[in-house]
Image (tube, rainbow, N blue to C red; front, side, top):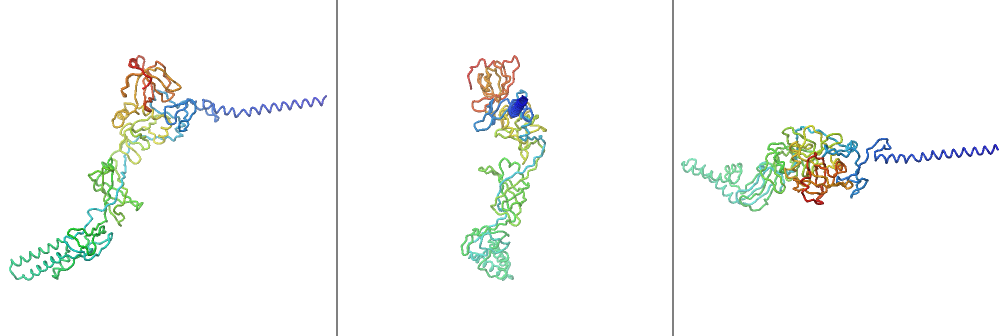
Length: 547
């Protein structure tokens, strides 16, 4: 019996051990599920696997900022995931209408950086394209003043450098030979009448002086005239010499050719100093002053700079390029600058006084208005329309819209645009008491009336609310900015948080924009005080289902 009892006891212990192992195994297998459940619960406000409590997800919004939300994760038409909006990220505070709110964690991930509006002296450099041209005052044409023939060429190629006084060519002219003989005879007559009467000697001297004047007017050099006076022999040919040291930029003379009076046979240009004609755009020409410094670079000599002076601003405008020519004079050592070369011109412009300015990266330019993001608090940003002035390379003057010391976003502002519904907030910008910035926001750039993208305001009574579709039907009064009469029509809501405070029969004041043609979106609303009849005008209007 004892062996049998021992066997039974052993079997019982083995069974208990197997049961304990199964229980421990089931507890171990359940751990991942518990962890998984914790992870899922983290999206609904429970503690995550890392032990940190995450805010509950309210809804998912369109990644492109469109007024489209979803209670569950989804993708848009381009395959982009909708962005979850958690508690604390969606701002339904009426006092914060028109502001953007992003969680601190996302602000850090986006790399948002802000900088204070400061007074700066905006030194800037005006850049323009230019071309090298010869100095027109240093261009000389060699054109005989009599008829003749080219007898001999000393300089027979264009582009050849010549020195001052260097012979260029010899010519033969019957008229020139006759004039030389006339002068020689007159000079000899003056000598022969040395002891003659005064009247005869005076007449011969006048004849000699007239002959000499004719030769000088024809361009005969003084040394050649002196040799003619000494010898009395007329030369068959005469040489023409270069009047300056320079480069032969044009050569028309051909040996043996006949030329007429005034015909240009050579052109010699002194290139020791040249012009740069810079094309300055119309909007910048008022900043250019005569006598200002200029810095010129050319592609042929990278790294080498040429300093010049603005000599003249032309009074004409090129209608095709909308540019004004500006002439810059500069020395040309070594003849490195050659006519027709392209040049890059920099005109330093000194600032007149310190002005409020922000970095260029802080401005979001939509084409019709300029926006900056003001950092109001941690994770809270306010889009604000500004009016800009002159620009430097890194900063831009702000004429209206911000005050000195305010923090403007200078990095990741476009990411904030993508991360939040910036368009709706910007469209909701209305008139403020701050002055010019609010007025510019209300009227649009340049004082023009607000366009379709601008914000509008109205008052009305809530007729019905469709929470899943995020739409509300209002009986509103006349909208002066759109010239609408009182009517009943549906509106979309920019986000789900705007559903709060909307009850049928409630009277509200609301801001709205036209997101797409015929699609009107409410960006903010606030209740009206009791006793103010917002829908009185709407009650007498003809309701309809849309606009």
